[in-house]
Length: 289
Image (tube, rainbow, N blue to C red):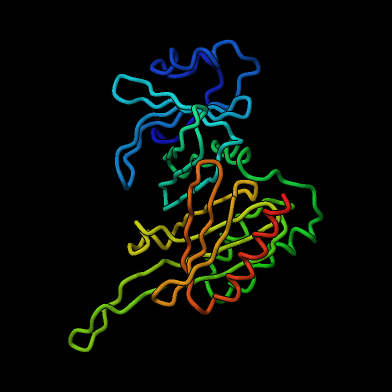
């Protein structure tokens, strides 16, 4: 439990090391906003640092303890281009990309014990589309759009259903299995190189969602029990393009705003037609915004 993130209920409850740094926005404000303390954890990657997070007036504030210093940064939610959520067993993280209040393109990674995921939901809800009232029949119909994955990849079917915000309309989906290429044959045994891990692209009326395995853990057994979700609001997509690679593969490229960040997803020629439909529909939608 020492690694679980905690909701801080008052300025007096803020850990002493952070109080001076966050006094200006938090000391006198009422009611007290949603503040989360992320303690140190020894993650699969590294030992993390202590962080304090707060959303206030549509700005995400992050204070990080580095040695004896507190480093502060703030991220206006209107300038957040995309959100990544990762989960591998008990290790989870949020990556928030966009511009700081100083106009600097950057990404911040918040790592935490998966048990603590609920305390981060208010931040996630602020970045993703707002849920809408819809009938249970309509909601089930949208989630059923992923039923075709039942016999293809049950894990991704459930991940896709869980990724939707209630009220979203699914426009297109593209399933791309893991891609490998042979590199050599030795004593009758073929050895392959992974080109791209399995992933799913989803276009809704509000955002683009990418769901995939994490390339740091997918080859290990733990990779079977987690995934990575990327969420990009349509208003933050400047352009979408499909290009053919020399090896016959196709790349979907999204250019994001603000900051000009680029996301690339690789697909096989089997998905070329679906990919073109996905890209053309997305271009029409962002052009109408």
